Image (tube, helix red, strand yellow):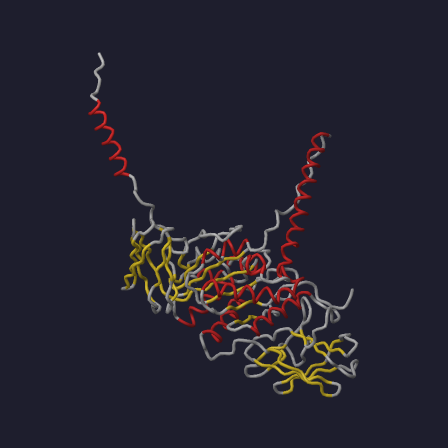
Length: 506
């Protein structure tokens, strides 16, 4: 016989069950901070460093670190932000954020944080660089911290990245950006402060992928990257369609399946800014280093707009006019017997112009450490050190020579041209011998020939018996030039030209 449970008792049991479930469930969303905040992170010293995340709407948030206690209230959208009092270098500390739940980050330092971005030569890993086993073995350094942003193209600005902070060690450094590591290592040695390096790069990418959509669309010339990308997309889709048709036909005729087209769809402009830069904003940083340009070498004129526009946009997003140092393209490809026009030389000129005409911007010249047969030269140590020299001299105010000779002006003197330079250090020299090489000269006919060049005090006299009335000089103007002008401190001169003539028709 089955007894009926009284209705009142059933209601009571049901109420107890619902109450128990409600009590055991988390009534509020968990506290969340982006991945850029993790154990081992470096927070920017001497700066009102922002810490941000999400929680329940109107939730009170409390943050403690290094003797500071800060509070904020999450907005109606759950977002909150707290800015720390500027704090000098030091640590390690614990950072605790409390709200609906509590998160504690351990081994946190205050120091200088640098973004390391660009294409494959920035992505190039330490373990693949030249003569680095000793550097890797010695890379254990608790005052250098490394964060690599996982590759992530995004159609709109993302809220977060994937990655974590690690102390530098033989295990963590080996897969990190070689240029970034050597840059940070030199800074840490010279400054004796903690250095945090955020590596966010992708091989083979053009600069327009690292610009925001708004920046690109603000300029009529820069907007032309969109139809160029669409044409690439159309070609990709046409190739895929033809491949599918060829496969179907091969199957129908019982023939071998053809090889698939190589490569994936082209990435759209702005997608790497969206996925790999925007989510880092507004993390406190000192500045950025940049190694890119190979993928834009055929559009040097446009690059003169793109590079400054990207720098200014990043500075605006991070809320400060931070220093920005780039790597000029290395020497690459086959050498030429006679003076020639060169896409790579024009791109180097665009980089030089950006460095010389924008505030708090500089450049590392590496025209002497490239490889003719490899677009990825293995010597990354000198690249990182030259970037560090620029930062130490320009940003940190060290009394050092941080640049090789830079062309300043010219003056015609009969059948010769006198060139004036700045950044000559303690004097200019012809490295490896008494004779300067790499100079070409032309008259009004715009036909360049190799020139004789002699150092005359702080100037250089250039001439050729083939040019009676010279009007223009070029130096290192080739994809892979032979050139040897340095200062006595061992830093190479940047390639340059005194003219602005368009390329000769082929």
